[in-house]
Length: 448
Ligand code: GLU
Image 1: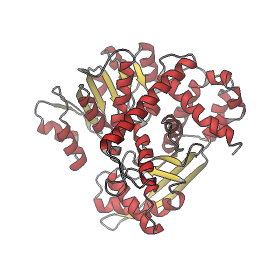
Image 2: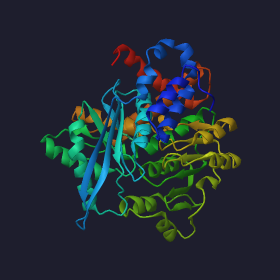
Image 3: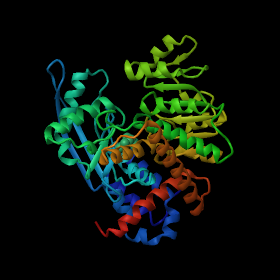
Image 4: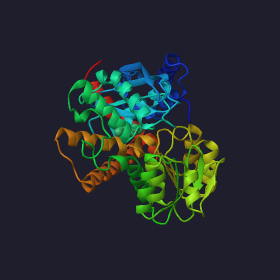
């Protein structure tokens, strides 16, 4: 990462001063500002109109108490968040994360990235994010339901089909969206399908939404490889994580002829040289909500590693699909040493700035999350389209749209990188393209 352009440095200094202690938010802003230097010269009117300063300040930040009672009758208090970051392109759109690490700095980094990611999809969605420091691990269904109901009892007044449309993220899947949708419907006495995405099939959900983030990341990886005359066929792939994004990245990578040899969860990683058994992985993670140690217990030839780094596993393609800053400079150096050719971020900001630098210096194809994992939110926008037209598309039609959207993002990144003097740099391409797509409507709408 270079020093910032003199016109951008004061903006970053203000962000640091105004948002103390929010390290992840600072990191996300810095990464975008690092890419914007060529825009200062080519599009000075956007800089003069303080578009960047406006983008760095959320339009609205909501923080609220979430009290709930556990199965033993004990009362707990968590903190709920919804950061409505930017609505230049459409209603705020972005997921809800339930994880003990959640605090304002995490929600703001996610919300900030969401603005550019959503702009890149070319669909009419603004950027927002929310969640809670609630830890769902080990909680019963009844506890999860009571928590979700309490969370929605405050959130409902801030959201709506034309205002703000939350979805899932870490710790929030179909079950949680169901409980929250039920509570929203009960409080408002309205069947407003378009208020949340990630709903179940049969009550307003879109086919292929569950698969979309992982599939999209693999489509993006395929397109990056194609740009160098390569393909996924026969490649060894490592996927970190074992949640929704990781599982469907494994599925699509294997569909396209790759062998996925490792996945991970918070207890370690598993290496399966015969290729990850997808049905077993789905059963353990989606049905039993179990651990990867259970996978190794069933597949005797697979090894579970409790301590150590999944990035030490030899591979051609690495897909970090777990969480922020999970792949650092050392992990990147290990991957490069083993000859990795492509890395795409299925999670949000999983690579540290040092890791990105290592990949870029080594000439590794690197797809940043804003582009590579945009398939999830893009398919959420397709869910909103289906809700608005009171229709339900087939899996095939939805997946085809997703594939087209991902290819469109890939092309836009490459063309923008070329136009702004950094050919082949997907980070610069994604950041500048996302920025311009949101900056132009902001200019048109005046100082708001
Ligand atoms: N949480 C996902 C993301 O990071 C999806 C958001 C959505 O579908 O609104 O993009």
